[in-house]
Image 1 (cartoon, rainbow, N blue to C red):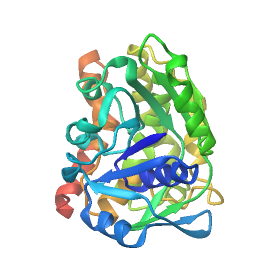
Image 2 (cartoon, rainbow, N blue to C red; image 1 turned 135 degrees about the horizontal axis):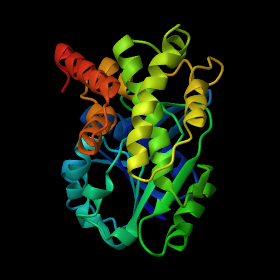
Image 3 (cartoon, one colour; image 1 turned 45 degrees about the vertical axis):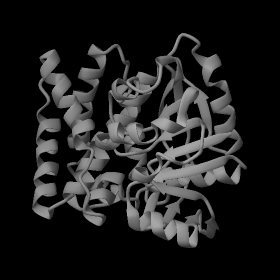
Image 4 (cartoon, one colour; image 1 turned 180 degrees about the horizontal axis):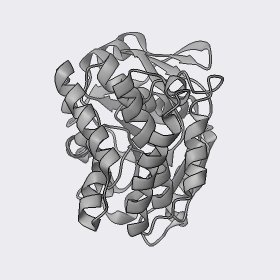
Length: 313
């Protein structure tokens, strides 16, 4: 299958590498020039579960793809939420009437942007529990296991997504179909809405935060705000199950020593964060539905303040 990975950061690198190893024709598209240059020069390097590997995968800057001759069967979106519209414009010439677009972005409501470029029947919303990190430009750190839930938004449902699921599973990405992806997206958003912002503000990995005396109270308060908004959108959240999932992030033997993507963006790479599309989205929807969201509001403000203090771009 001919696949575009749109957004070749940590997670895009993981998916691109694993799909490339499964013999798909993969190209990476990103906007970070140093990252692009090093992958072109040295290949995509990765610490893959403790093994140092290199894969030669084509990569382009998103501003340079208008003349690239590549008709994609599948686009997997991993760009930052605030960059989604610009990325879809950049790759528009490579997206045909039969191209499927799988959105695995953090946050809520991205289909409203994607449907400006492709029909609803070609849009697949997904939620992934895979993790990844970047040790620097051109070098990914990939560890642990994960899975993907996904749902086609068109009337064809599962039938329209079967080929995509098969391709992902041949690459050992553990995909399965969901009849209620919005609930899965909200469940993942709860993990991001706690671990990302809190670890970023507290300059901590997930285990460090989870071992504090106040972790449970803070997490429960944030999750309650997500659950209240989700209920108004007919997305069912099993709150005890969500809290149990978040607590698995504290385990030092698995992923507890990992710094979430928002921490990597702001603290390591001095980049603006996606807070407005995670906790900020809950604040906006809370105002629309008349739901109080003080914890999400405060956390969003704190992250924006830290962005400004650090001069993030």
